[in-house]
Length: 377
Image 1 (cartoon, rainbow, N blue to C red):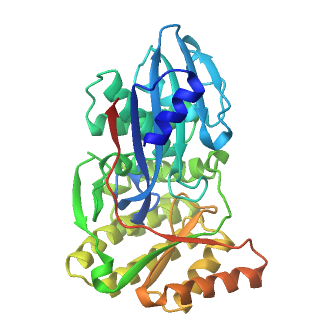
Image 2 (cartoon, rainbow, N blue to C red; image 1 turned 90 degrees about the vertical axis):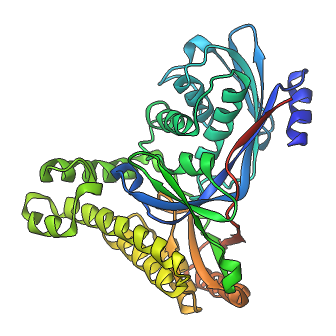
């Protein structure tokens, strides 16, 4: 993180007071159920977003990014409220607002989490700022409180009705483990996820069909689940059984039924995946991953042709399991494969994309990594 502190001083003419980092994430399984109070099984990845921050005494917020040629965005702290100016800067401003900060700040952002790839670059950005402010301003917030604050920033300031999974794993991730997260109470359990010992690799396939989730598609699906829960008299999909859903199907629209079916079955798949990992049964895990993609594609309709081609090509090349990850409508897929099949799988997916006239995909792998951290300078 030394380079960001040097660049901060060059840009703002004074040293940073705190630097921080927060990772992106891959969700092994449990998609679109965090806002239904379900269980999810993500892990933090090695790619991270960094922040360098110093206080100002004039009530001004200045924000710059090394990915955007250090162009400085400026706004008065008393104008930081939902609906105010900003583009990507809203993710930073939202955190300042949700934490109740009234201090002028200079902020420089740098990062390697690919934007729009379904790896939660937005949560990494929010959490890097949150842990830095928590340290710098002695806010004394717990990780759970920071997770709720960063979710509030994205929900109420940015206008993206996301659940709490991405922020939670970015803050609470553990090296070598996936994080079983109960999205109702934010309790967590580390689940060892060491695929290398089994001779496997988790390949991440960035389709480069980059998504933008603030277009209403995500909000519509969340609203469908909430409507179904209300009609069926349950608090959330977490409290709904598949039997009750089938019995009361006539109370729902066809779309509501399909959205609810995905949520109920996906929650069950997460718990089954934890059991499979506990037994080192990667074949069963692969089947659950495949079933997750089918449900996301057919019941939740958040996949796209590039994601489907990537998944199908990976499975045809021998993957134990493959599915889209993230909010959908583009972004990335994962494939659980034999380590010896990495190049074979990359070639199969690349050839399938070329055949369909799609942009060349990108590939990378990542081991489960540690969560966010901050240090005073």
